Length: 294
Image (cartoon, rainbow, N blue to C red; front, top):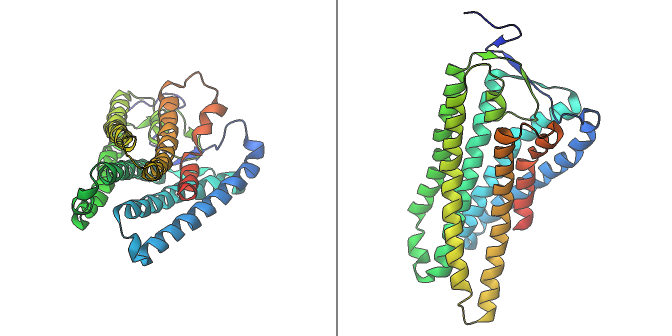
């Protein structure tokens, strides 16, 4: 096989640059993210502990909240340690295999979070629109199936991304990723070969997961608001409305940042690197926001 000049054949190591243009101040940028990470871990751990030991909280809404907290901790832990290693200890290198693993874990956990948010919307829909059916509908068996389903969905749909990169892409024009962590398009764009299949599958996964979840979350909340504004008692209306608004804030924060990351990678060729790199707070901010919002 002829290797074009400057290309690398299946590199053993990749380099994460951090935030392009802000290398001189990255050590200071790492401080608030380190603080947010510890707040997120401590806050979500407290939520998990309280829900576990307080039997009155063994209800679908709180179980989904515990699942979201555990996923937030896992997602932040996949990103923050390496990010801080780049910012504080000048350790930008990561093995190609470790980069692929981080990519798969990040996207799988993001898909899991999206599935949990969909389950939370379904829980609110049944609780508000069909309150008499709520207890029987959300059985322990259904909750188990939801937990397993949302976890496996992301893991299984994300696995072909690994295979397509590992088996199809052999030549890379550079080993430098202008980012703080590894994600699918950041790796794919390094290759010199035809990456259309990789891009198409990435689009398929994004729209089959995010598109499906957003459509059903939106439909659920449309029906919820129709029901809420028909409630005769103002106190019940106010309570239901407050609960929905809190959830909607979490949904918007998660999906807006996810779509910003998605579109800047695919259509942000003319966006300065500094602005493209601003999508990196997605996981830490979401993990920090969730426990504080609830």
